[in-house]
Image (tube, rainbow, N blue to C red; front, top):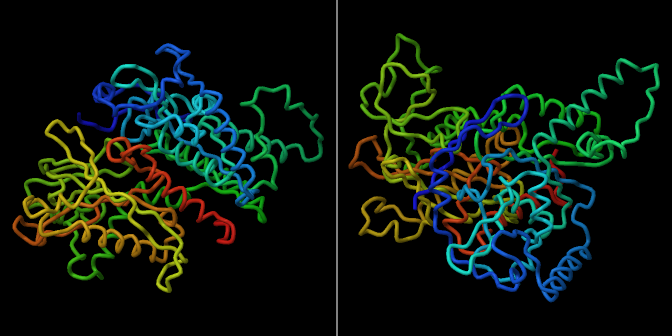
Length: 513
């Protein structure tokens, strides 16, 4: 069954976008045959198929409580640092979007007991705070029918940070964050206008939770990292996003001795969304790379590099790939006929990936004692995915293997999977080595998804096949494709990234400001 990014229209106002229109591809996703589940009937014995709150047996409950107690007894890892996870919604129900979902199918009840994220209380908490777009249930595909817990990949990642690395993690919505920052600005304005007048104290306990100032914003002694997350164009205006970062930066300036920041930084988010700076960075790397890693497709920066008196370098090509800035999710590159005028900012000469898809390489940073390791960290390949498209535009994702490079498949031969991994790690480390890494590539200290295509040297079929990076997809905006490419429990990519995140903001390694 084909899978595709749900094409969702969002309102670009001061509040998070609401779901106006859902792509018909969602119906395809909802009909997809899910893996057979092996969750024990004991979890469902007392409930019908419509009840969505599994209750573990006494034995499993005891096992779960024991596991939680063991975690609580471990010395806190960076005890005072708080993480606030604030994701932007993409779909109404995470069960309808398979590229970013992780489910508990094909797992045992003992597995569920080891992972508190799947218990009924936690599922209800996530749904209450973030909505069904982040925690929901799906039905098994075969009898006996029962519900499978399904979580958003970002939630799974941050819950591992909490449960497995003993970090203090809170989950809140984008609306909640905007309301909190609005209160910060309002109180600051009132303080300036009433310096000589003492305002009456209000009892916060009598106010609704959503209208109270959270201690993270009112107590200047609490260090906090606000982790902003989305896997599609956030749906918020550039001005709204800039205002959020401005308020966070203002709060940070009043706490010189305590870490308070957003991750990713505003400079990296802006740099990444524009696309062109990344393309130029990749072109620069290629210009000083060994010949076998120096290939780059021909690129026309339409509204920057040329005026009406100059020719586009692609004017002799009849077919090109168009790429937009501020695009993600379903707004992928697509083959198009070359027309005289276009408002798109990037056009690349057609490469092989337009027909056979792309490799998606998930790279996580890990500690290293090597003398050549930048900032005592180096990359490792966690997972490699191939995505392909059919004529209708639907996308298929599967795990890559050595078989893709076998001589019997002339698509990539004589390239090899090992060559792909070596190339990706080379580009990853070159990006980390840039002087502007802290401003524009800081998230690579946690990890990245490099989207790699294959092109022909010289731009003509029959030339030597070469890898090239089509896009540097940050960890906070990358689909993991876990349901389709990983076996149960589908969490390897989440685990690799959260381990790197914990290390980057860890004890003894320096709190990153």
